[in-house]
Length: 465
Image 1 (cartoon, rainbow, N blue to C red):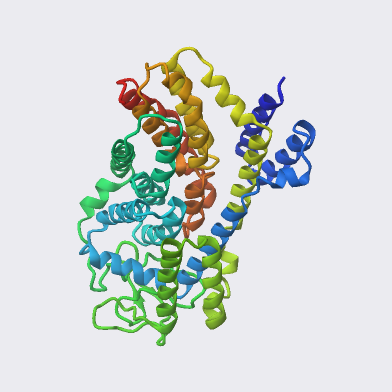
Image 2 (cartoon, one colour):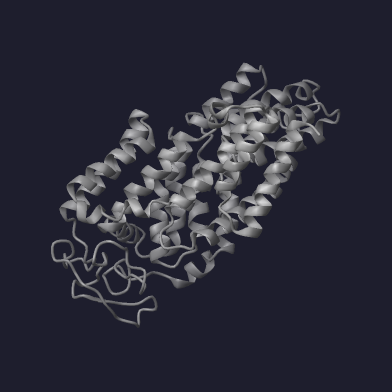
């Protein structure tokens, strides 16, 4: 049995054991990386750790740390209330607002994980407040990021168009952009219909004057670590329950929450002003100066923690450490697979198939499966050149093939093992993370199974380009 096949079978075993024995998959993957790397690939410790996603580790820790502080001092509740007022109480519009926001950020040049890191914590805090499915809200954010991800001025679009030009293939920037945009909009529409969107529309508008709207927190959902619940409707210390009928006594901190005349009950106290400024600084630093999102978030969180230690004391404990272990372990094992050539081995095997249409669909599936665990752009950079030999035969349109690969390799970023999916998993407050992880994994599996075939059928079979 070849080393490459052994490494794939070990990955399958990791999935089976983690699923059946409830062991953290990341810990299993670290053990598998050590075993396969040492015994099969003849790698030393440095070779194994070469695949450790240090940048993603810092992003996960930094972003969840910063937004834990924002939840503790009530900043996210203030943002949620502002979002409700922006859409005049139509809660059903918020998932689409988040979709459009992340799409706009990536379309103008933000790296997809950076856009998700900025938007997901706010979106998922909103989902918790208004009993919206976190799966719906999280996937809307990720698909929004991919919808704008291939604009001609975006990072992904520029890279893929550059690869196409370097390989002397026919290309169409507009087709690439529209293929990803339309695919993600359609997927988002299906998700919205299936995961509670119709009920949200039926709910109509919620009050925004503090009588059950943005200032309402379902009983038991108060943010921890404050001794109060931001979002008090009237500043009186009474709170309406999830159904608007069960008052719950809540202590109100006069230095934080007062009736500001709008009914919101949330005024911009110094800690919240500083936190909002930190969030704006994060956006500017990442988008305007191309600084690392994780390092920037950690730095801003440390500044806030130093200035307001009481609000920030529990924030470190609220970092999603189990998620960090899970993602870093799996991606370290994927790094071992890349180091020993397993991914290249699989791609070259498919590229050598003599039936172009069959090779095309298999490449789309390889792109989707591998991208669910690794860099989407990196996978496209490897697969597009593998498609050149059968594209040269003229039976497959290059424009359609590149677009199909792009769609297949990026829509799967909802997987909890990808950077975007991991950010969504880590950012969700007050959820059963194991259950949410399974939901994201199942949904990611459905996307991996269905989208490459659909992209191939729509974009490759007709022979575009």
